[in-house]
Image 1: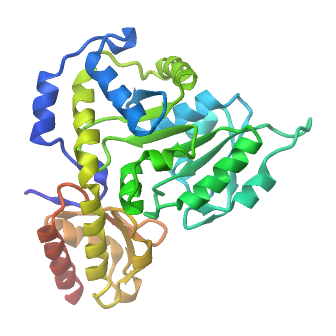
Image 2: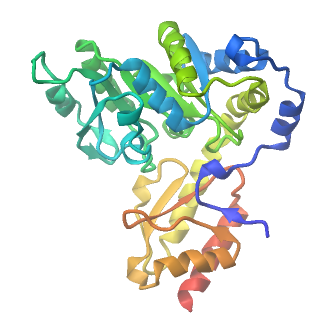
Amino acid sequence: MNFIDLRSDTVTNPTDKMREAMFKAEVGDDVYGDDPTMKALEEYAAKICDKEAALFVPSGTFGNQLALFTHCNRGNEVLLGEDCHILMHEVGASSVIAGVQLRTIKSHKGEMDSKEIELKIREENIHFPETGLICMENAHSNGRVLSLENMSKIYNIAKEHNIPVHLDGARLFNAAAYLNVESKEITKYCDSVMFCVSKGLCAPIGSLLVGNKDFINKARKKRKLMGGGLRQCGILAAAGIIALKDMTKRVKEDNENAKLLGKELSKIPGIKVNLEDIHINMVFFNIDETGYDKLKFVEELYKKGIKINAEEDGFIRFVTHYWISKKHILYIIESIKEILSK
């Protein structure tokens, strides 16, 4: 059965164009700096973020944790949102790898108050850890996009206190599409950024960590320490180049399909969708008022060829991507109506 997979945009398979490019890719040992295709990917990644350099890493979590590991000294404190991906879904890696303490900031749908951040920055005191980094996430894993105004305020406060800013930009290009700006208009409010080429952009593996040359040089050595020094990885870079040059231009379609999916879901009695929160390719909703068993809901959709994850924190999440069309959305809606009517 060919499934309609709504679990995440990480499920996207490479396109035929990517597969052909991967097959023909010119490669070399990247740890020795010999892979020309990887060099091309990293140079392009840096360019579109208006930064000096970039580094390929196996995953988004790897990229975020490498950023913390590179920016911070052991025992530093990192300020970040209470509901961000680094805190919630990265296995507590910051305590294991970077040896840092995470201090959370209250989040209003992903946005942190710059004034609260300023209050949480540690003064010099023998009892206090040093504030080593501030992290933002845009697009946020709750499906919303931070405003450039909010990012600017936080970044300016960080600069006043000489603290670097890292951006978890796993879905950076969905955020840029929502704001109708180029990615560099978002990344100018951070010192480093991680973004994925495997989330919605169809590359099979990988993310990029981007920043200034000194930062990336340090990160390259720490990447080796973490086991991320890859060899003939131009095969992966070839797909990444197509992801950044071609696939980023069409993610607006995924955002629009998510809006359509959310709008149609909200018409079904008992399903509650906050349509205002659909900024990118994610739709969060709950089915509590339908009275339908949530685990059975997952099972019944599977029988109809639709894969979804079980609820988390009271919400079910659907994610649109390259392989989800408007035709699929109509089938999904009709399937849900049929399941709930039984």
